[in-house]
Image (cartoon, rainbow, N blue to C red; front, side, top):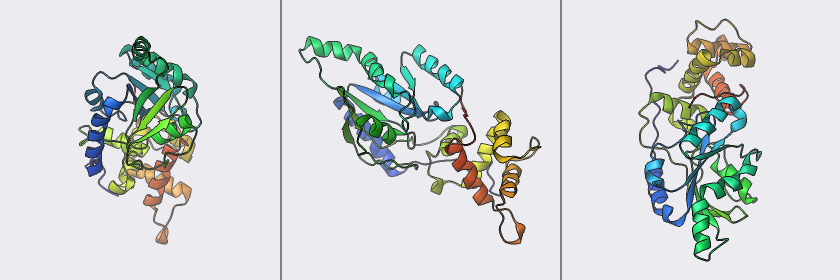
Length: 287
């Protein structure tokens, strides 16, 4: 097994720095910003540089993949954002759940812009939003759903949108897509881990067994019943995470020559099933 206690998840390819510049340059083209975060980890999946970059532009937060998160915790996050003067709505961009509230959220966030346009005789002028979010939070799924045409590229892996694109969302709203952007360094190891859990950091640049072990370590402390129910294993409270991974591998019959457990296959299964919501509705962060 890898020495997963010592490794830190890091990823900042060159195009990320370029994307940050593009966001700054494109701000003058929009009235507001829509940030898409993962409802399971709203804090870790929010770019900490964004507030500084967008300055005073109005912002709407979409808590995406809400069906994979604990709804009670998501409600707490919505209240948390409201106290900060930010409109947040729980959505699932693949199914469209919650997006019926999007139009009113936009009008609320840009009420001053709408009023200003009326005063200038430009009533009905389209409201323009920049859509931002770190990789794999669901930006392309959101734009596809709102635009009604499958023009944006969608993939369940990090970093597939590479350049700015405009889309009409109907009802006087236009969306500017941007590539997903991370930040240069994860100061907190937990942030890097959580981003790897949801697939925002490419599996190729980290170690899938390390990530699976850290995920199992987290879940064994916070939601052990999820592990027990999904993998039908018990009595793992005092075991190390790599031992839990081996238990899962043996239970699933992931064996290689000589009866040795295929921990790589087990790790891949654990990560894929968490990302697919098969372990249950799990929120890893409280506001």
